[in-house]
Length: 153
Length: 200
Image 1 (cartoon, helix red, strand yellow):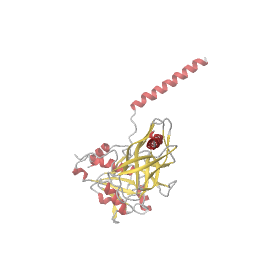
Image 2: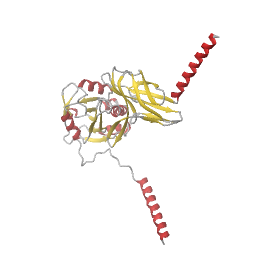
Image 3: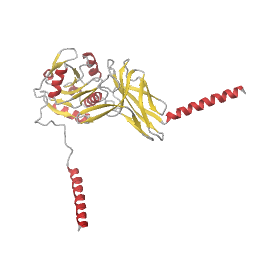
Image 4: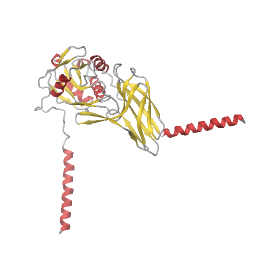
């Protein structure tokens, strides 16, 4: 009997945890990567696609990363020949939609890196949403991002 | 009578729309890469800044090479690495002998944060035969002006970290130091490689 109640208790906790996860599970992160930079540099950016399969818009309010002192959400805009960057207070991921964070557009700025990051290394980011659980994203450090240079002739 | 006028006006409106639509098929979008001969970029063909070992550097020192020059800063999250990646791809379309005749010049518009050591490491990390240049703000501003380029420091809203809006154009100089092409941000590595070959 004692065993049964204990099992039930575990089951309840397990189910509750699963549901808690489901709250954030409408959000999935795909192809997260961080731009590789030389060891002395202390600023870089993270890119990814955030999918929202939920029926409500998701609002990304902030992000955290253990290796950066400051993390900000930014957008870029090419105006004429000038690239303009702007800090954003939030990034909305539409219901049943996605937000693409990619070069020339949205990105997560990692400012004040506390240690050098190495090509190939995986770095964890936490994405903080309003009304939703935090989502973890593993980003791989890549020198050239999704556009690797072609090999020499 | 009024109704007739209305019909005529509507028909005229439709006619104008059609003309504009058909016309747009025959007009090429304006090409912005060839500099306007009336507007000279760096007319003196030279400038002096400081190299990453602290030595004075003159653009004339690179005579005999094709020079790809652009402005940026090492904390740049996207535009500068993307440009360097594009140059890398263009280089990969060239032969080894051709690459040896091409130099990339990265002029920092952030003398406050880009010290020579960081600048050296940055340009070497991305390859592309690059030289990093810095100087006093006044010296840098003079060069920016000579190329009709712009930059503006944008203070952070939630931190002390500032970003810099800047011209992303790459200026291609022929072997005599004359600006021959201006590569806009959206142009491809193939276009860049083609222009480099033209002036080799």
